[in-house]
Amino acid sequence: MTMVAYNEWVTQRRTGGGCLFLVIVLSVLGIAYHLWERGTSVTPAGVTTSAGTGRYVALGDSYTASPGTGRPVGTPAGCDRSDNNYPNLLAAKLRPAEFVDVSCGGATTEHLTGEQKTRDGTNAPQIDAIDGDTTLVTVGIGGNDVGFAGFANQCATQHQTASPCKTQLTAGGRDQLVERITAAADRLGGILDQIRAKAPEARIVVVGYPTVLPDDDNGCWPVLPVGSGDVAYFRGSLARLNTVLKETAKSHEAGFADMSTASKGRDMCSAANRRWVEGPSPAVPAAPLHPNARGEAGMAEVIEKLLKVA
Image (cartoon, rainbow, N blue to C red; front, side):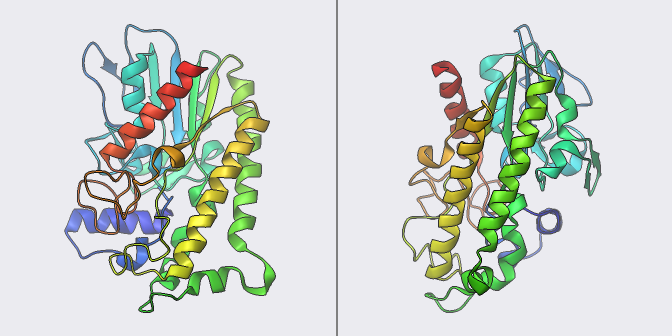
């Protein structure tokens, strides 16, 4: 979720305003609570220590930070990290000697190596949290680079079969989303190399995005007022993003946590007691079109299983 759409959602949530339907309809990607107080100490920077070994650092955007699903923790507050996001749940399982979650809502690949201004302060370059003692790094990033939220107003339509966004984004024979996905992957590849240089012994895992849209092109009309053509287009673009993230991880000697497969049938249009991702008007605490607590727990489980296999 871009910072503009993200901040508008935060404002709405704080003031009790109406549904941000058009602003967040397809900000699907974008997009550190759980302190696990048993024997754990916390610093203002969001570093926790326990009786375990190793050092785990979590980088990412709002799909990692998980705004609204639990209690807000970490600084700056504008990053909206929740205490039940997948990094915190994973850290509770792994019990590293040190855990740092620097994920931030609205983050792009540029914010992994550069500062990010939020409504409540500045998040330092996320990569700064990594040092030579780091043994595990998870990276969930890329969705905001593609910029889905920037086209949200054009996607909403009263015609169920329309595809205004696809028409706009593929005009002139070029697909703007494909170009943005490719550029994001190129940047991520260079950042993975930087992470490896800073933490030579660390296990690096690129975290993919869960399934957001259903296989049915009709989606869940009219709850999601997006035409079938655009549903298919954005679903395909999200699949491409995950594929490119996987290929980038492999080419830079990092693991890949496949969240789309694990969340198949748990998209925003699925039953409330199954879905990992909420719709435009969340039924449980979560940001619109972002993972809920069930989704974050599922993502943590996928990464834990990947690490065990390795």
